[in-house]
Image 1 (cartoon, each protein chain N blue to C red):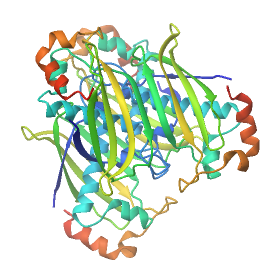
Image 2 (cartoon, rainbow over the protein chains, first blue to last red; image 1 turned 180 degrees about the vertical axis):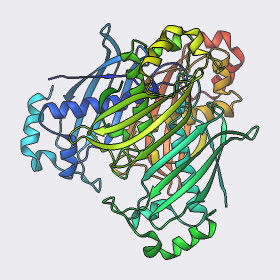
Image 3 (cartoon, each protein chain N blue to C red; image 1 turned 135 degrees about the vertical axis):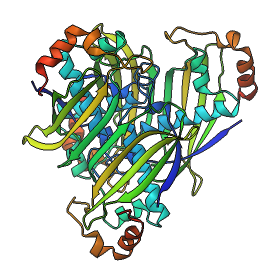
Image 4 (cartoon, helix red, strand yellow; image 1 turned 30 degrees about the horizontal axis):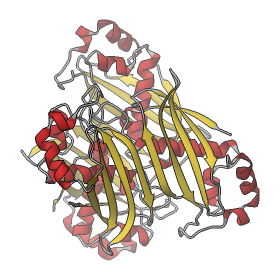
Length: 138
Length: 138
Length: 138
Length: 138
């Protein structure tokens, strides 16, 4: 399953090179995984209310073509490498007007509680886990 | 009392106009009041640990000359209008190399607890209040 | 004329108080005026291509109720105080689910060229000016 | 050669997990390489004035321990993998008070001109190139 969410690149996200500042792609990835989870009936804010946080432990991104202010951007998100205490998302950033791939990246997350201690998501949230497992690519 | 703190304008803070994006001055103001409070022996993070938060309720800023990437910036912070449930800071943003005033603004804050309910700071934190009162401009 | 644009508050926009960091409302205002101008057939990026920039010279915002992560937010934008070299926008930030007013603010802008020198917009861009004048509130 | 630059984690950089939002480490890396280049007598803003930009083409970061508001942070930057059209920096993010390694990452950059076309830095900026070559780790 791939979730597609569309946003518009903001002026506040540009830098003096005239392109979107590279770090902002990671906040776009974050939008992608929020919507990915929502599409499975899991609201990330509800997870946090149940004391499950998903801090980022590993990220990467390759930039191919620069996104610019006001570009319509499709964030494509999929899931991979679901483990008992970790979850990994892959993303493609695509320019809507010509379907050009601008960047691709990943983020890996730990399942932890509010004190940042590991949570066994598979065991404690079996139903949610099963839904994730179903759409896991590998 | 005026606190002076020096920072360097970051590339990530620029926009495609080639200047510092205006909203970032408010994070500079936030640095100014953190250091203002520290200079009085009050760590803002300690206030939060004691369940006193200072959310912003009113802000303003006038921009005169644009700050640019890598400019050394002096943030001048002073206190005014201290009330039992509110506190107001004034700021000047000055370019170090020529002492040019780039912007001036203010932020007003409520004293609240973690549930965002008002806290009577004057009563509950008498010692801290007295220190603030001493350096209050009016 | 009031333009209404809907966005979702991002995780990256929160702070450790658990609310949207106050400075981010100014990037929401910027989205509002981009869409306001677009609704009049004026793309802000096209203005920049024609060497008209709109740097911010004065801003203010009053915060009433905190926006939170994943809130659907309506940005209401209108125009006021159009002058030959300046333009002022007013904004309301409204929480969609209960139509609650969260914040209101304004931004005032100068018309300048890429060297940040004043541009007489009224004279040099008569057609655009007339369209703005038509929807100006005062 | 390793450049060490110290900053303080800002409130604006936190998120509602109570830690520094992960994308902000990339703006810290950017501070690190600005200061790395400055220590070699190369101001990044001067490079841009000479029409050499260094857009990011590949990044990665591993997060070990979360940075928190007001932490003093040492950014350690070194150079590696200098090629004719590319340059790669490595970074360590260290908490000053206990010398704890919080994160480590890299950024790779292309040498391009203002139109984002490749520049042969080695050939066109021989003196600067030689200085970089001297401190290149491999």
